[in-house]
Image 1 (cartoon, rainbow, N blue to C red):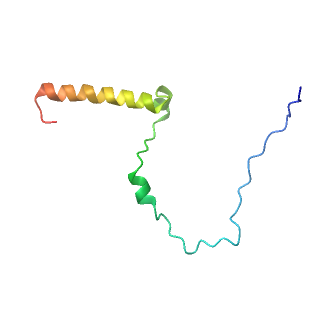
Image 2: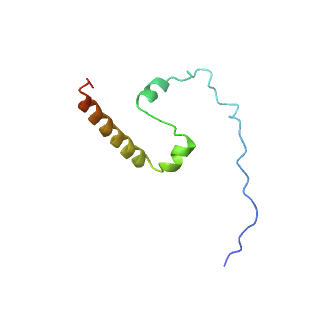
Image 3: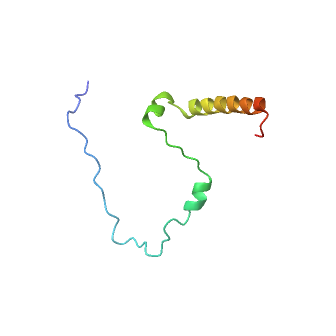
Amino acid sequence: MKKVSKRRKRAPAVREPRADYDFSWGVRGKYAARFAQRTNVVLLEPDLAAEFRTAAAVNKALRQLLKTNSKHRTQRGGVP
């Protein structure tokens, strides 16, 4: 059986880019708008994240909420 090492692993050191890399021609945020169109990231508060462990759980709860709200709108006779 192997002995377990008691040494802690060090966090990797932050490294600077090599001097021979030239980013002077680069355009900051060139694809940011295109990326933002395809993503829909929602950050949950810690108390909500504790209740909804998976994306599927969040989706299920939101679908139930939408069904409930749409029934209320229909019963009131209002325009959705």
